[in-house]
Amino acid sequence: DGKEDKTVSYDLKFEDDGKLSGTITVDALDYAAYDLRKAFAGFNNKEEYSKSIEKANPGITITEISVTGLEDLYAPLQIVYKAELDGATALTDNEIYLKPMLYEAITENPFVVTERRYPISYSRKIKHQVNLRLTLKEGMTPEVLPAASAGKMKNGAVDYNYEIKAGSDLVEMHFGLNINSLTITQDKYGELREIYNTIVRKHSEPIIIKTL
Image (tube, rainbow, N blue to C red; front, side):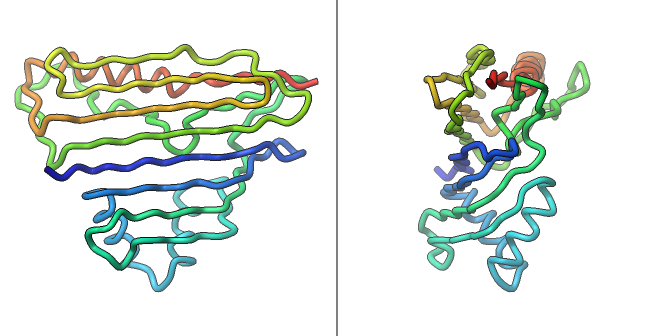
């Protein structure tokens, strides 16, 4: 039973100027791998593809890209970007604000109308995960972390979890969203809409890091 199964993992550290640098790894299986192979087919080479990623995500500069599993249609596909991120943080005198979902944040609820007359149909089941591992510089302290959040529809059709934890020099975040059913009936629409409202709200909350 194929799914759109994708994990995006950021492993980043702070540069002296407040920018972030490190690796972004995309692991794709099943339909997610199929989608990426299809996207790649529209470009002459991986460098052209990485330029399209830069264009779609302002502030990201990709210095290197490696791709494994592109040729084998049934294999997992992995893309690793070495990248610099400019504009992902907001700096004040002694605080840094950072929204930890970075380019993977869900910023708008796709379900805007208050009522729905027809079922929602998905063409595939979905498993999306996002991880962040952020290494802090000396003198930086995690001051405020968004509270953890999790929720699911009563019938189990959709569920999510969101968690952020910090050590002395490390902040780690995990987000998971699963769409487990191809059809959600209109009587469950309000429940689904509320889950997305919560996700959008949580993704907008910044980590606040104190600096010396």
